Image (cartoon, rainbow, N blue to C red; front, side, top):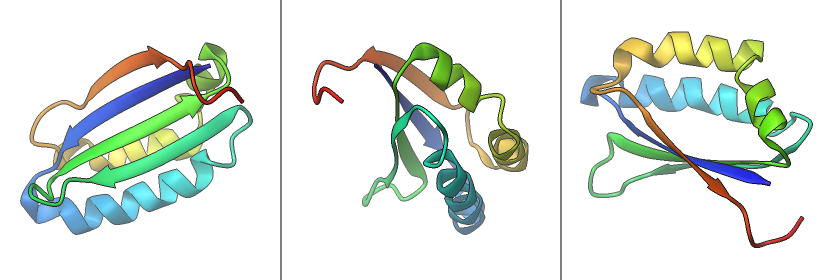
Length: 98
């Protein structure tokens, strides 16, 4: 099992649009085969900072996510709304055991 934590800093004027676009990606992503979690978090004291916690059964499942139409639409939609490139860090999941 693999998890990725993605940190994203959005330009303040696009926060609402980013949240709306991300909800659509989230709704489709949690339906993917192999998806265990797809949590979207927003910092309360810095509302332009988001953390995505994505967990998949396998590395292949995570790679397949990047090939979906909903991911491509989200990626292309939000690209110019970010203050800086998003940062993803991969982890091996130990617990919980699915």
